Image (cartoon, rainbow over all chains, first blue to last red):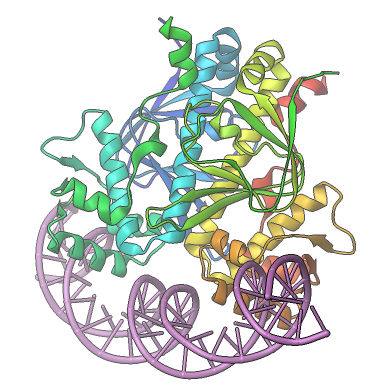
Length: 224
Length: 224
DNA sequence: CGTTAACTTGATAGCATTCAACTAGCGTGG
DNA sequence: CCACGCTAGTTGAATGCTATCAAGTTAACG
């Protein structure tokens, strides 16, 4: 058992946790709520790159660089813990397993990014939307936070459309179509998946990329 | 000085190096040429996720997982070296600096993915195209492979359009517009950037994400 | 009740796709 | 030698998905 001293902090919806350009000294662990990682474009508009939920490290990829090239903000009420990079590096050096776990986390993080590229690049708004909903549903399911096929996703359509790279207006129509087709049901902030298979079909969703089976090295090391 | 035993292999254009679903046991280091990382969709079409050039590790992110969730193929004649994961893990364990370098590489790899999401999500075909050209130009420049603002990019318009998530037809028109506007010049397989600033303006290109300055930890460790 | 944020719906415009045809270069085999 | 097929690039016309602009609804809240 490990005990790591961390500082904990509470945030409200839409509050910034890290700003682009911030000098980074700590990694952000999400205990409760949901946060987004985003980039700001020249014209001031933003693009949400990913959502992080309970148990995720929101800015792991910044461990290696001095300046953040993206921002992190709360998308609901959030409880976060901060682990200094220094501590992370020491832990990795002392405990091989932790280093591997961090590496694994980083790779899954990357894998989700790659999958998202496919999503935005090759699928229309309907598929994209379905895919995002399924990814979030699957991740919440792992946490045991899905009941009767329903989970809480306290994200406005405006923010969702930001992540999906479509306009809020169009997302709205898209969601209604998915609803009309009996695939999902929405009662903000709750989303229920009525037809997992149908939705997966629409989305082209194959959750391999989430690597739910866990890190190979970890298993290999501990199997014997 | 380190000596690592590797197996080296030659590939021709469009030859597959790793296939999706392959059991992975080695990491692929590119010595010469250019390769692409791609995913195959259900309908058989593909999406190119990234290009890797000389000096890159093409499938670093697979170090932690047993099965590839993407393929790697040659986009030109290629010389590649294969480093067994086993060796990588050992090196990381023995030499902190190497572990950090690998981590840094993985993070830059991820950062390029994130930037690409912004690209596809928020920019039109003209901007995307300009952005890809600038990214490749910048990476080749680091390698000293840009002369008189020109470099060799032996990738067909079909493959480029695959990466950009647009149709070959539309890419063609887009390239001609960029050419007509005096921003670039194309004489396959060579591309010349005639107006770096203008192109960067069109692309919204800010190369911070490439982290050309190198890993912080590395610098910190060796500065003293 | 007025205000605000979020959601919904309609009409129009524009960018990218799709389908199709045509050109150019290049290697192969009759 | 030339015909042929193949790959890559180019151009045109029509369709369609998504954005844009605009307006209206609903719910929460002081």
